[in-house]
Length: 527
Image 1 (tube, rainbow, N blue to C red):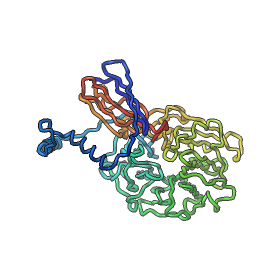
Image 2: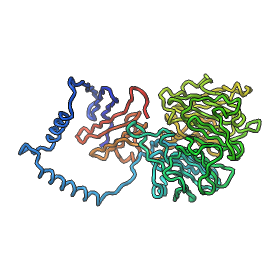
Image 3: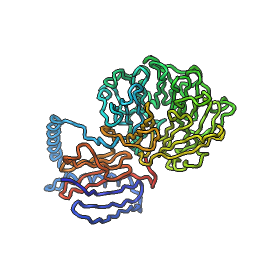
Image 4: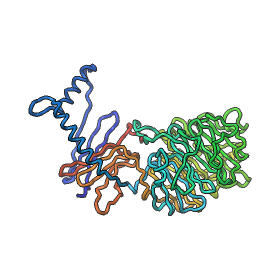
């Protein structure tokens, strides 16, 4: 029986709640009110336990004797044990989706030798692969079999085709526990690699139990990449060997991002109030913040988390432009631009006014959803992602110190909360966020398509099921998803209610109503 009407409830944290009731057999809506009442006297622990014990006993009382009978409990336990054993012997599991929704995605990489081959990783849902440019995805069973965590934070691929996967994301990337409506992610287990297109994986020696925030390949070499993470500094790995520390950067530095120029000559890495740049292929680094920074460097304090990028092409003066975004207190502190590989920096936001205001996160979320990248073929352009996505272009004909430029918001249809940008060789842009993935098939980056088919990485806080195979689930930032499992629905779900879904149930009564809830934090958009 198809359910077309749902029971919609709204659960407000630390506040009163109201519930809307929509019957499957009626078009009328009635409102039920709830209220809180402050106790006039404080209950003691003894009183609280006595009342709780009385309530529990009332649930198990024998209706004939009026008492809780130990024999009843023993009989019920044996019956439940027999049922569990019988069910366990016949348990089989199959994927039930949603195969059209997606989930929080921090990791996307396009095979540098084949634009149609794309890899993506969810913060809680494992690793996926597409062989048709994102039109549909398949789960990499090799990852599930070999790796020891489903929390994926970053992916890169070196020129010889080795796939490197960073895991974790707690701390520096702002992933949290379910207590605060975070992703409830698993702990990081370092870096893993595959040499057979994701069929099998091995853990990189020396990275066990490490929280990795970013991996970045040096495309100028066959098999060299860099990684950063929680109190790891910046590490370089050559030919899957032992990770090596680089000069001039502390091994305990908390760095979030790292980006490498196409020829490997320029490297920028940034983290918690730290920005380092190398102009000699990683042999040495100089600090772009503090007393040791270049004379003309204006980057001051303020930037608990920083993201960085190096341009894909040299500018007209033969330098690689650098971009830097700084967060402070959960909102954007500033965005910076350098035309001479870190010697001089110029603020381009929020000093720029046109088109910028909507991009500032008033919700204090940029400690976990902030990313910046350059634009291939246009070194004087960058894109920034927070709650939404904006593109910056340096105003034509202006000097570097007047480089306020112009900010333009990209398509508002892109799912909120952005974590990753990845380009293919033809200029198509992949965006990873809380809603999975979207793609622009044009270098203009104005028209985007959702590409979540088969990307079954939705994060659910709770699920419920009904008498006719109906399934409902409250998901992280993807609302409450519903599937009546009719002949046409398959593993595709419909959005029953937006926002952040939470506890939900489907009634087993004849009306077939459903109950769902959405988490709110005093009107602020929550993670």
